[in-house]
Structures are given as structure tokens and as C-alpha cells.
Length: 330
Image 1: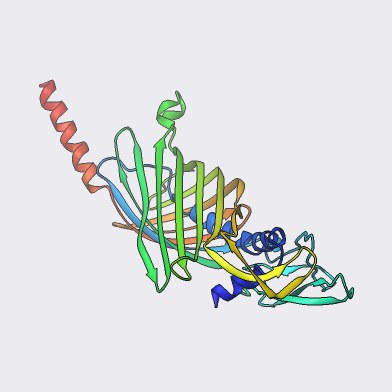
Image 2: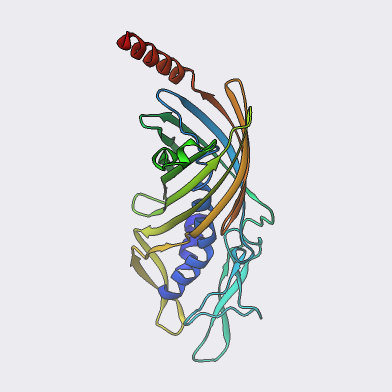
């Protein structure tokens, strides 16, 4: 069925096909990019070696209103509805007819039914899991790794890497104040691959980057935090292989004249690019944490998560270091 949808899209001129596919898939790329850039921290205080945590949770991502539909600018194809709008991947589950004007008769002729979307009118969940380990100089490395997923002809792999560093320690006068202040950067990459046959393949890949200034204050077991940063992501959709489609002479469909197209498109689209701000709080009970936060950005996000968090090893290292220093002084 997926192959049929793709080849149906390819029935018309490729310039219009690219416009339709880009508009349809762009909100999906922005949704993925927003999720990949979220949830990287729930405190400004980095672990010290060998402190660590493992945290998992769910983002509830709310697409913007303009992500539900798009109005393509077509050169030769025609959308007969009055608005000229089509559903995106995240939009209403309504098909929309697309056609063309027959230059000989002047009559409108139907070409395809553009597919509808998922029909989501509320926040869309996206799970995540990550770990982090403290290093030296109040620096912490964060990582997200998912094992390759294979479902029939679909393959997907995902990884992410981040770094959090205490910047308060380098600022005179500020370094004595009773709060934590850190800088965090993170990069993520998701690759998916769908095979229609040995020679026909669809790739959908996403890259995401974010940088943040984080401030937090521990009050007994509760740690409120705020963050301000910049995020960027981009998506790439490519269809490779050879496909037999209806003939098109630049003016009309020629159903009886099949033509072959190779590697029809390679599009970059559907990213986020701009500022993001969030506010949240983390509650720690023994070795476990629970956190919730709200992120304001192009796509607003509410996140909740739980984690296993331990600084026991770093406390032992700190105590051993103090004992050694005391012995050296004696």
C-alpha cells in the first residue's frame, strides 16, 4: 500500500510532486525534531565522577495550528476545493482530490486523492530514555541509544549525545551563590529505512541540535529549574530506485504511455529553528527521581519522567580524596 501511495503521487509532474510531499511531511519532521531536542535535563547540577542516572519519560508534543494543513503552490496540478488546502501527516483524516485541466477539452480531470493525516487534535506522545555519567571539572556526558528496530521492511536506528558543564564555577562572585548554573549542548540523529523491493527504497532521516543555559536550585528533595536555549533540526526524505508511472507530457496524463523515473526525489524539509524556554521541577526520593516540565517553542511540549539517580560513588571518591589530602598534610 505504501508503494501504491508513492507511485500515485508520482503520477503528475515531479515539481508539483515534491511540493505536495514536502508540505505533507514537514510537520512530521518538526514533531520529531522537537521531541529529539527535549528532555535532556531536569537539573543544572552535573554529576561528578562516577555519579550517574538513567531517565525515561514521555513528551506530549502539541503541534502548532498551521501544522494541520498546508496550501501548496502548484504549477500544473489543481486542487478543486475552495480553500486549496490539503491535510498534512498530522492533520485531519480527510482525503482531498487533486486533478488537472485537459488542454484539449478544457475539462477538469481527477488525478489522485491526496492522503489524509493521523487525525490528531491533541498532544502527540513521544517516549524517550537516556543516561548520563559525571566526568571531571563538573562536566557530565549524556547519551541516548536505541537498539535497531526492524518491523517487516522497516528499519530504524536512533542515537544522541550531549554534554553538560557547570559554568558558575568560572564566574567570580557568582560561584559562591546558592544555585546551580550550567550550559548544555546535545545532538541527535534518527535514521529510518523502508524497502518496497530490492531496488525501491524510502529513507526518512532527522538531525537535531540544541543548546541551553540551565538554572536550578535544590530545596530539600525538590529541585525547580528553568532553561533558555536554541534548537535546530532538519529532515530528509529520499525515494530511490526505478518507478513506472503514468506518462505526462507537461499538459496532461497519458495513462496508456508508461514512463520510468529513477530516484525521483531527495528533499530536505520540516525542521524547527528558534528559541525554546522551559520550566520544571524534579523530586528526588532516595535513588529515584520524578520530574515534569513545560517547554515553550514552535511546538509546545509537556514532559514527565522517572529516573534512577545515584551520586553514591562520587561521594565515596570525594571522601577518599579528602582523607588522602589530610594524610598528605600530616
